[in-house]
Length: 113
Length: 111
Image 1: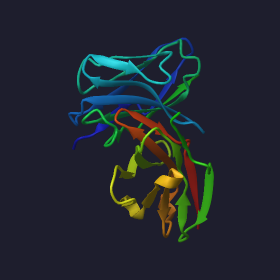
Image 2 (image 1 turned 90 degrees about the vertical axis):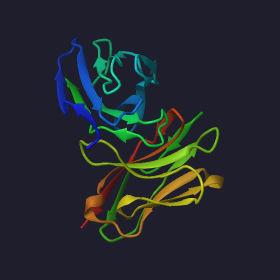
Image 3 (image 1 turned 180 degrees about the horizontal axis):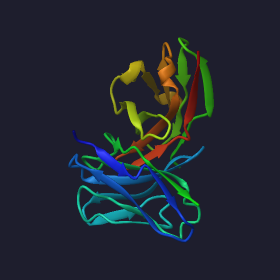
Image 4 (image 1 turned 120 degrees about the vertical axis):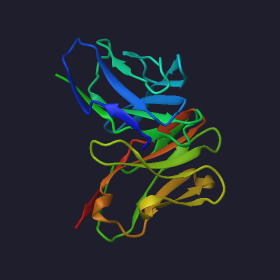
């Protein structure tokens, strides 16, 4: 079955460490997105990629980095520069670069300890 | 500026009662409109969406929503709530590569 998979589901990180969240899709979607979810704030866009080897910053890109070396994969690295990384992270993908038919992953909860 | 407002942070309804979750938006043009549901610790599941046409849209799990252009609203409704509907609900509006989410409304269902 086609889908979008995020791993791990729960992730713990020590302060000062970088950590990478995985997002893989087998839907043959061109566009992929990373959102961050904090209580009472809805979802905010971190980065998005419309095509392989290209990506753009979203509203809250500071302290994050991404890569898009393969169509299926869009990993997000939370760097030590991110001041408040504890959050729920959602990855999404769409077929045609619009968000009309977005599929979302199950999310990764990152906790800094 | 584009924005989405869900005025109710938390709503509690009795099982079997009707439900309406409010969503208001501010956007430059008529956007695409969505409602998503999120169970604890899970991703988002699309309930329904509006792009154009009939302003009353039907979704999964017995939900429907009505787009009212004059009020810039896209309220979600269900005639009879089930205990399994307890979750967080997000309204989202957007255009081709821009999607804005509301802060969410948490639904609690009383037995």
